[in-house]
Image (cartoon, rainbow, N blue to C red; front, side, top):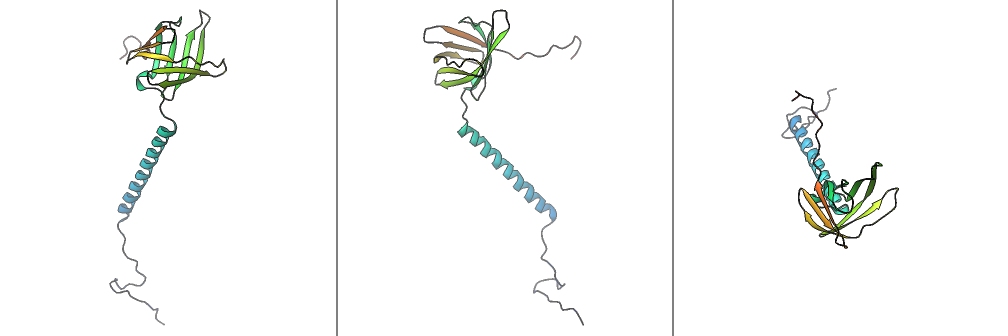
Length: 165
């Protein structure tokens, strides 16, 4: 007995022939582009989520490490401000090492205050006015008129041995 075959009009006439698909490389390109689109959309959604739920609290000019050059008996202290509002202060303790203060910065217009956290006492400074804020200089004044002048701490590069390039 002969096997039964059927032909579909417009087909090549071979039994069980499937319609021809595009070359496998074009499918790979489609999947690669789809994957890239998914990654880009995911990144965009993550960025948008952080901007909405965790807004930047510190202006760009204020971010970084500042060294106190004058005021309030804090000469030589360093204050580091992060974009998320985190502040780390290192204050010389009169020849007996340093004291580290950690807290959050709240900026509202040209005023800011610091709320400390960590293991030490919890303190909140009174709102201070920002008198000057440039790339190199940061000047604030409290309600008693006392001024604190800070300058940006420049990153230090490691010492290179003589003759090295």
